[in-house]
Image 1: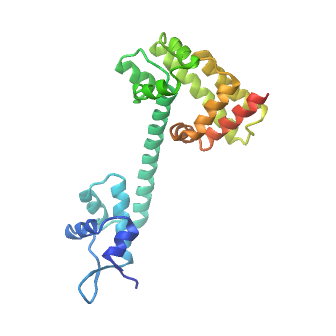
Image 2: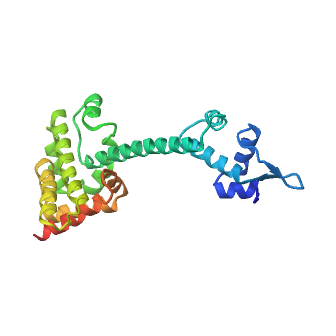
Length: 251
C-alpha cells in the first residue's frame, strides 16, 4: 500500500502542512500510519477523506459540520457524492446568477438611472450601475453615442427599464434557441435575430450602426465580464452573437 508524507499530501492537495496538522489535532483527519522515524504517513483512505473534507469546505461548511457529516456511522459514499453534486449544482447556479447580474450592470454601463435603491433593485436585481459609470465615461464619455445614450435614459422610469430588460431577454432567448437548434450564425434566421438585437440598442440607447454593433459584439467575446454573462445564459452565445453580427453587417 502506498503511503505519503505530510509534505507530499500538502503538495498534492494544494493545502499547507499547517492545515494538515490542524486537521490532525482536531481529529478531522488523522493519518493512519507512521514511519519508522515516527512521522505521519497518509494512506489512500486518508487521501479520500481529505478530498471529501476539501469539497465540503469549498461548499462553505465549517470544520465542525464536515466532521459530523463524515463521521456519521450511517454514511453512504454514494450518498456523499450525490449530496456534493447537488450542492455544487446549487453553487454553479448562484454563480451563474451573479455573472448575469454583473453583465446587466455592464449593459447599463452608460446609464445614469434616475431610480431610488428600492426601484433599482426591482428593475435590475442586485447590481450597482454606478460602480461602472466611471469606466463608461473614461471609455466613451466623449463619443456621440454616449451622450445620446445619456439623453435617452435620463427620462426612463422603472417601468421603462423593466420593459427594456424583458425585451432584451426575449431577444437573447431567440438567439439561444437558434444556436442550440444548430442554426449557423450567418443564416437568415440568425442574422434576423441579431438585427433585432441591434435595433433594440438603436431604439433605446444610441444610434447603433452595423459597424458599431460588430464592435459591441466583439466586446462580448473579448471582455470576460460580458462573455461570462452571455455564456452563462448559453455556452457559446457570445461568439454566436459576434459571428451573427458580422454576417448581418455584410448583408
